[in-house]
Length: 347
Image 1 (tube, rainbow, N blue to C red):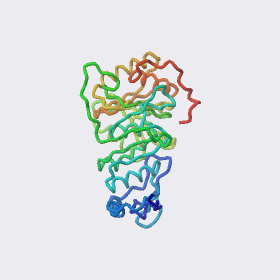
Image 2 (image 1 turned 60 degrees about the horizontal axis):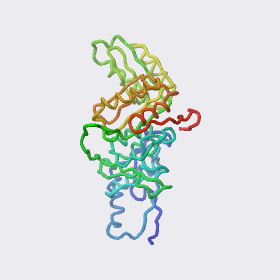
Image 3 (image 1 turned 180 degrees about the vertical axis):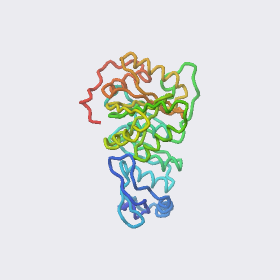
């Protein structure tokens, strides 16, 4: 066999801007410098002609130009693997987890959730951002840029092929009688404990610049917005999970000079992700499923990219909503088993 050689990320060329990223944050402060890719590629170039050892590179950490240790934020080790893979133009980057790749839903919540064989980078990014915890959104950025597939596999079940994430999933065309799979639905995911801000103002009526002013305030307060829904005199915004109460109070204060605001806590976002070309049918089947279980949708967002359809419900309803929607879009026979209680899962 070949010897393994331990290497620190900065020794192979991983350099970042000054800063650090919290292990709990979706957004790290330190950014990998573009020069890192060339440096890492040059460091490992000799292995392309003589593979004399197996490099084992530290993840999550790097150094800035001053030699200070920086961290890469949540899932920084996976991100490190993607950066190194992109730098050496690998044929595939593998992320090893404790599940069989990306699934059609959270298996702790949904009976009948199953592995997704292939998914696009765009769809995987949406899943990751809106609740799927198997892979972090930023992990895919280096692979996307250099068109390198990412495979998510299970350390406890190495024989399973897992999920392959690629630039684009080949389309087989639209059949005359669509099924869940042929509709292009890939998965259903969710985020709990979401706060929604409702902004009402008659100044919106027939005026321009209102949204620009609103988003400028959010930018100044470093508040990230997930979903937006507008009418002629109101805007509803779902805030990024874990937005601090202090920021929410400051946002209300800033908006009070030109609008009336209300804060609705205890909400959840449910997202249907896939190649949603048949969006009308998917929305219809979803709404019918929600009507059957007596749940009312409070906010809806469906982008022109046809990748994500997201809606808001009460947090206390989210588990049975996800089960009902998954049944409507995937299951041949609806699940009759009871969904878990909110207290039974630590998410």
